[in-house]
Image: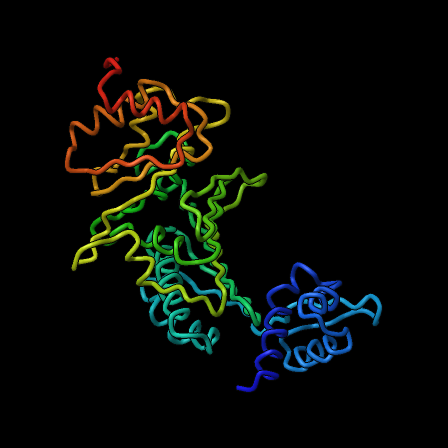
Length: 347
């Protein structure tokens, strides 16, 4: 490839990657970045418009550019015993997403089939709808069912006090309301594969961004019926399903044996994490893993009973499990150290 052609592709890639942040002045931003004239940039903009990668609107001085939709599609299916996620993928979804690199299609294959199957098997609904929007840079998908709601179902089946506790359990992984038919790994791994992964159900909103160890719980202003799952990923990411599995598994059998627990999720409002009951909530089901990483991001302080329950009592009962603490401030680190040394008296 000639240097001129390669530079042209670099310029157009830059435009596509930055046009969403600079819809009104992408020409100026690109010209400054590559030190070329606005006239030269306009040629690249027009080429992208002709290729239908960009859409333009407005007059010359107030022209606005945005990524053009290459695919905008939606379809609904009745949830029946005959509905199968692999057939829907092969017949309807994969043809819409192609062409994409194999590694990206693999991620979509895994994510779509896991989430679609969850709706079939667990939603108790009668219909599921899928919406897809694809542009030159990324693809996003929304799956909506009209069932009982994923967080409410988990809360009921596990006898939890609050729907938000269901999200804490989802964040750990290996959670399923049907252990005879499901491993409970689908949502956990799917949420780690995509750039953005969100679930809205009831009045609770769960979100995970790629690269962040922690998940987030947000309150929704309006009560949403059923479950909505939204996934988005860059069309040319180098990420692979294997890389994600490798991060949380080990051994020849790829056992799912590592989890990251977002401790902040056990804390509501102004409540401090001080009690053994709160610690036991954090510890629920972690005995299923060999390595448990407690993420103390945004946790300002913990009580001696909370620290003692996790890092002395539980640790003594399960010496085979490795317990690690990350993103701790000075106060939290001090309390954990005291618990590990056995200096905190049992309450």
